[in-house]
Image (cartoon, rainbow, N blue to C red; front, side):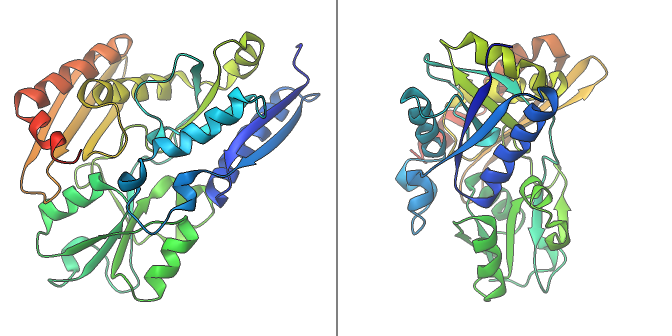
Length: 307
């Protein structure tokens, strides 16, 4: 092993730091002599929290700042939540590793209600995700769904302050932070289809750094990688950004993949769904085919409305 010290770029939020530390621990366990250092970087997406994320550039802002840190020589790799990573990775970088997946589902959190179905008309629901918003509106058009930004702790504090009756977050983040007790109910994919890559962590490196790429390669989880590749192929064909009302979720069935996807209008009045199955070796092609199905139903028109 020629690399003896590795710098990991990470956002400063508690969840992002946990994710980077998790990768650091995995690397130290694999290479006992390796020095690993976290490089905490500030991103514009973290700094601007008074507006919906899509209004200031979307989740790609989180990734871009870490990529700039790598290009500037401040870090060797970056750890991302895969749901934040744009479908097209810039040529200067590679995304060779996707770690084993945590719970990919959405989690409902409330101090007074057990489920969306129990909420009275006009109840306030907080989420930062258009994908969650449109699926909630489709089920309950009588609810008030509003933007909820900030880290996990900030969002929970807004719930406790009475600003919302219910908030919806990724179950994976709560589990990683040791906050499972905050979850009122995990929403199955049939109720809230997960985001592309939700629950999975990816490791990005510079394309011109084969030694680092070889060093991290052993952390890749093939099962998660194949599932997320199929999901990302849907995103790549439909849009390529991370702030559209799009969901895609793949599961393994033996040596095959079952992929479900949806595109919905923000008000939830139009929900287009498609699914397909294929060998796991053909996940990218499956994602493209499922995306084409959605396009044939009118997905492009819906997606154009949010740009």
